[in-house]
Image 1 (cartoon, each protein chain N blue to C red):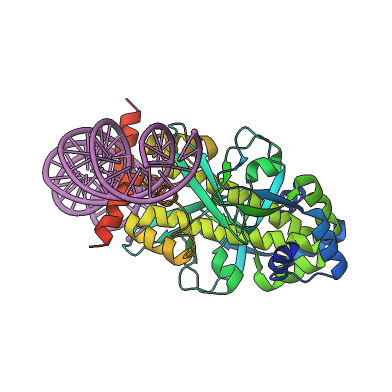
Image 2 (image 1 turned 180 degrees about the vertical axis):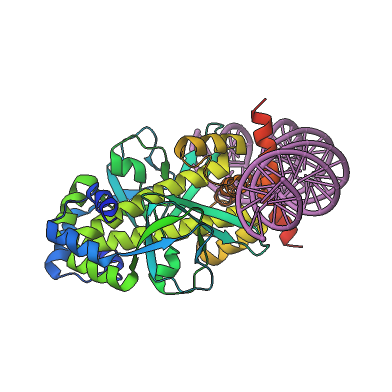
Amino acid sequence: MHAALLQEIRKHVNLTPEEEELITTSFRYKKVRRNQVVVQPPDIVIYDHFVVSGCLVQYYIDDNGIQHTLLFAPEGWWTTDLPGFLTGQEARYHIEALEDSDLLIISKQVLDKLLVKIPLLNNFFRILYQNAIMAQEERLLNVLSTKVEERYLRFIKKYPQLQNRVPQYLIASYLGVTPEFFSKVKARMHK
Amino acid sequence: MHAALLQEIRKHVNLTPEEEELITTSFRYKKVRRNQVVVQPPDIVIYDHFVVSGCLVQYYIDDNGIQHTLLFAPEGWWTTDLPGFLTGQEARYHIEALEDSDLLIISKQVLDKLLVKIPLLNNFFRILYQNAIMAQEERLLNVLSTKVEERYLRFIKKYPQLQNRVPQYLIASYLGVTPEFFSKVKARMHK
DNA sequence: AAATAAACTTGTACTAGGTTAAGAAGTTTA
DNA sequence: TAAACTTCTTAACCTAGTACAAGTTTATTT
């Protein structure tokens, strides 16, 4: 189970067997079922979640009750309410399982100690965050500069596995439009 | 000149005088004049820029020639074309000085060596990136869930210094609307 | 101080996407 | 296997923001 996690970390930093052992014991296993709520405001989020298998979704509900999908987290992705996780404040984002999923979770406390014991791990998380920033810049620019049709094509290209795995209304919400309009766009595209 | 930089770093990590000395010698001073172009695609960006005084702007020009402001970088902020800086690819973003500005710049090469010599500095950049991610999530949600009027109010609240320092068409571009429409929104608000 | 350019405003016609509502199709649960 | 819930589709009407064009104000340059 922890092999997937170590493999992911090895992509970016080289660790000794002792360090890998330390990491393994710092993460705890958690199984969640489809539709299970993992985080719900105003929870206090103490865990960061690494997805070994399955898929989670992270979303925000705005003042008008509209749901905005921030992230799909299939195998190999991380997800948490970052502001809450880092500052200890109440979560603003919901996290739910779209499928039965295997997770490895680590608490802020344990992670902080781990980062002191294995300084190189800061490196790993720095790289992870850098990638997240670049992906988010990309997404913001997509929303600002392209039409839904184009955004959908890019979504498919970027996440080919997800297209038929997650409900269409969530893809619409990820692209930033209503499910009704997205349905119209798809109909238009298939002609 | 380097005092501002060290002060910024000290906010998040504690360093020895030797380490601070090492940092000081790793950054080079650069002065730019108002309207000066700092990065222009397809430049190869080898520097990350810390703004000591003045203000830079980072923007993207889309396929239709529309300019999208990603970031204003006044005193104390960092800016670079992150994808280019990290991967060595051609820059996609423009960076320009909106005012005469004092910068401290560090090349990727030197930074990488510095991060090995001072592992704690990984920590600092990790925190920097975490904050950037949170700010970007916030911004994406603003674009997806609120009207221009509300976005403008939040912009003023978040960057009170900038409101009268940067041209209005750039604020419009930051908010994601045309300068014409933004002008109308402002007129509407002052009634 | 005049001349020129850059930044901002205003009006009118237009379009991407939203809202509401109703029905069709697919899934769970009983 | 029916009932009940979710998801997806279609259609008529509505609105926030765009495009274009012309005019006004504010900065820069000479």
